[in-house]
Length: 281
Image (cartoon, rainbow, N blue to C red; front, side, top):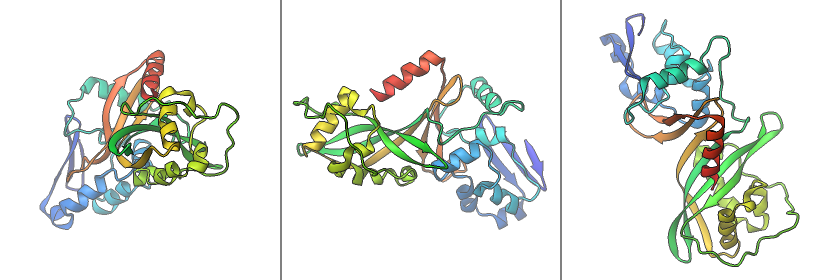
């Protein structure tokens, strides 16, 4: 519990509740408060996890609740989906204590790899609507630039046809999917997957080594499949030693909304390898 200037912030289980005096309630509407606490995009998830002091939430609390401070463990607990998940409290506290250790704190890194975007995509294949699962990853760094690359694709409804994929060196130009494309539900993927001339610019080097990915690309290049749009995104994080967690979007009128941790599990190094292989199949 944190108490400052007539404002009480209470944790019930893992969920942050506000109990404020009448004067504060009059000056701060529930809608404004919910908007401030909503994790509106993935960058904000990274910022809150890493306790960046210039976030919209930090400025909101500073302006609306002078004297109130929220520490990093509380911020991270607020990044869990607490309305629809029965979390193991001991496990959650173990995770939070590990990443907020005062000597060796652990931060998420947008550019360091070991996190993936799993997209559920609507496509039209031979006149029928099908779902295709496309996995993307970030390549690059903050200084030289970065981009999203397609890591793999899978759809159970695509028939196996004769393979027309090249077997030699694949030439690439300079086309790319914007590193912020995830904010718009990968709107840039529409252009990429309809740009058949430069399709290999958008693929990770290991993409066509997967049989399911080759099958998808084969029918895409033959114009038997048309990509429509992303229906859902799940982000998978394997960056933190000993843990794997996923992040999904939860749209609701609540301080616990937006891009939140939807699942978490302990994972030894070999278990992470298995998890990654299964994700990319």
